[in-house]
Length: 241
Image (cartoon, rainbow, N blue to C red; front, side, top):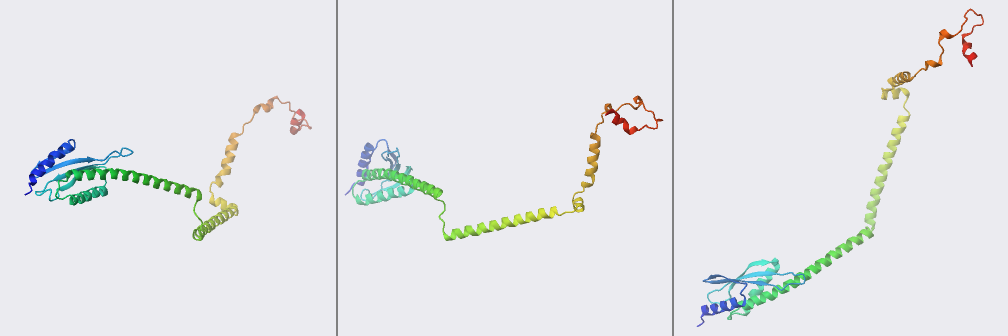
C-alpha cells in the first residue's frame, strides 16, 4: 500500500534543498507551498517571473496536486494561460510519480520561451512602426492619387468657389457704381455733416490768418493833401514801388 504522506514529506525536503531561496511553506495540513520561478535575462535584460502555489491532495502523486499562479511579473494574460495549460499537460504525463520538480522545470523553460517571444514581438512592433512611418512619408511626397471620382468632386467644388467669388465681385462693383451716381442732395442727405463742414472750415481758416502790421505805415505819418485836385489815394502804393 502506498504511503502518500511519506512520499509527500520526502519530496518537500528535496524541493526545499533545490529551491532554498524561492521555496515558502504556506501550510502543513494539507501541505501547501509556493515556488518562485524566474526566466533567464533576455537581450535587453527583460525578465519574466511567476510564483506558483502547489497544494497536495490526499492521494498525491497518484492524483495531481492543485496549482495556481500566486503572483506574476511582466507576464501577460495569454502567457499566463499558456503556463497553466503546460502544468496540466505535465501533470497528466507524470501521474504516479512525484512531479513538483518536473512541473517547475517545465515552467522555467516556458518562461525563457516567453522572453524570446517578447523580443520577437518587440522587433515586429518596431518594424511595423517603421513601415507606417515610411508609408506616411511616401504619402506626404506623393500626394493624393487623382481618380475620376475625386477629380470630379474637386472640380465641382472649385467651380462653386469661383461662382461665389464672381458674385461677390459683381455685387461690390454695383455698390461702388451706385455710390458714384449719387447727386449732391443724396450725398447731403446721407452725410449731415456736410452742412457744417464748410462753415467750420471758414472759421478755422479765419482764426489762423495773421496780419503783419509793420507792413503798413501809420496813416498820421503820410503827407496827404486831400484838397489837391490831383490827389489819388490809389496811387500812393504805386509811387512807393
